[in-house]
Length: 358
Image (cartoon, rainbow, N blue to C red; front, top):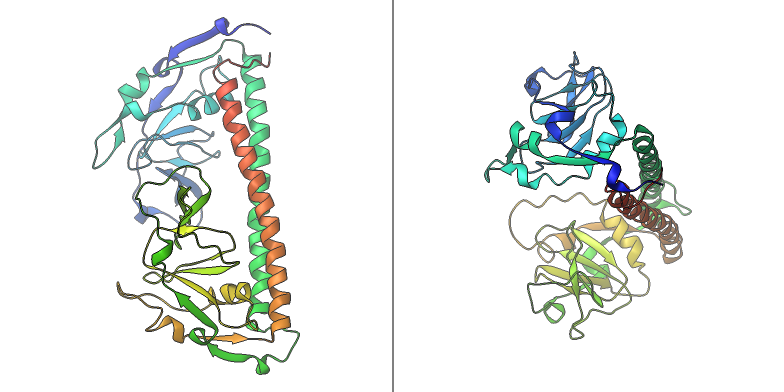
């Protein structure tokens, strides 16, 4: 292996043609045609293309300024992305160049606050460092492409498993694929099978959360885990609970100790042993309810929604199916996290010359 002293440093403008193509209005998008790439990847289809070969793009407008994308062949690229075209440069491997750009920090090129943007000249001035030999560039690109393939395979497996889970669970939760006569399922209001508890004694006493700690701080929204705390006081430690946002009606099933951030949350638990809480949680996600105002919903409306319930043994069987799928998804997501972490480490090492492959 050679030392990194044989690497070249050059401004981007000297190795790539940098430009913004023509933007087309969304009104001209078609139902079929060539992919259109905008600020955030594919934004539509168009009857023509303006690039026959794939390109490396840097988002140059909006909140995602500085994001790097790789297009397909035969696409239309709009002016919301800056093209870094090296098709005429025979000294740099194209796939290596994409990874090199993806590992850059473009924050110093971003101007504006209300509408962040990247303009051409500051981008042209950014200096990048890369190995002189094409053989080393290609070895790096191949290694990173291999880990990208593993990431893609794992993402596809997650998506397929999620779709399979939904296709199997819907008929089970609605009785269309029931072991028993669905006519015998009990129609019960949620308030009669679930009891609620206010979150007051489980609230964290600070607005600042740590990146790690003994107990997660949760929300029922998409973020779910807001941070962590080591505070032992007021930890919710019951075996299982449905965390319910009283304003948005978003919900999460939780089976580990935690604290909460918002007083808008309610803790929902089973009133009797005849109720499987995991079954109820999954069935609740099928209920049709749309919040229409900024108000609390559980007591006044949501608790009155009716849920069809089979016998406890059937609830338990369906819950086991759910747990099997969730275990598989958890393993796949852990695998994806491992591959993404590995890729980041590889990029930091291979694209800076810390580790040499040739």
